[in-house]
Image 1: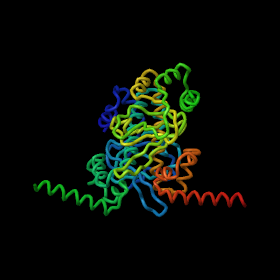
Image 2: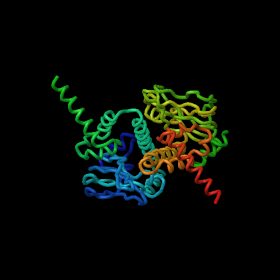
Image 3: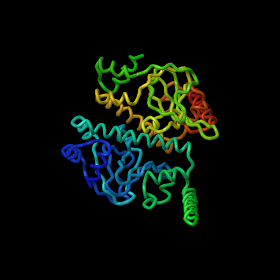
Image 4: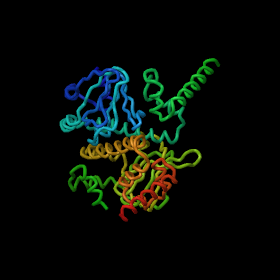
Length: 199
Length: 199
């Protein structure tokens, strides 16, 4: 488990065994059950979570109970309510498990302390944050620019194999389209593939 | 002009005169005319721009010529096509001036070099990026959660007095609503204010 995490860090920074041990000493291993809630609206959010296994969702619930999914968290991703986490404001989102999941919890204050002791971790999280920022920025742009089919295909690239793990209506919610539209898109893509295989 | 920039930095980090001078030595002053384009779709984007005065917009143009505004840049803000800037991909946005503007151009490679010499600037830009990330994240959440009137009022807080500087249809575009809806919202708010003043 920690091997994957080390790889995750070393894609961005070089670290020694001792530095890695120090980072790991901050983490709390949590085993969660399917449907378990990790964050509730109104919570104070002092941690972010590295997904070791399983699948989580961060979603917003409207007054009439409709849920809109902002983020999925699969293996090797970080999840939280990032607005609440960074701004120290009450959570507006829920984060819950779509599957039984194992996460490593990282506390914000402990991380700030670590930045002082080993500044390269500040570098790591700056670069991760840059990627997350660009991903959100692109998502807004894609909504303006690309049709639903293109956005679905890009989604499948971003979250490999997730379409086998997450119900249709949740993916539609993330993409901001109706479940019927997603079914139509999938059918069209399957027909296209079939006709290519036939040819 | 550099006094405002120094304050901008010192809201986040403490810096010496020498460190400030070194930061300023990286900046290129650019005076731009109204309607001038700073970034075009397809451009390689190697800089971000600190707005000293004036007002800029980052926008997407669809195939049929419709423009959608992603960001305004007023005094004390940074603008760019951040996807292209961080990812080294061709620009998908345009950035242009709504008013005559003065900006300070900061080159990415030079900034990376500065991080190595004075790591506290890495801290500054990590914290700025965190705020930008949260702002985008909140914007997506607000779109799910809040009605157009609330979003307009929050927009006016984020960009003080911008409604006197930017045409109605551009603000509507930023908020993702029709210009007619924004006119109606403004009228309702004005009537509300008038009735409060009368009472």
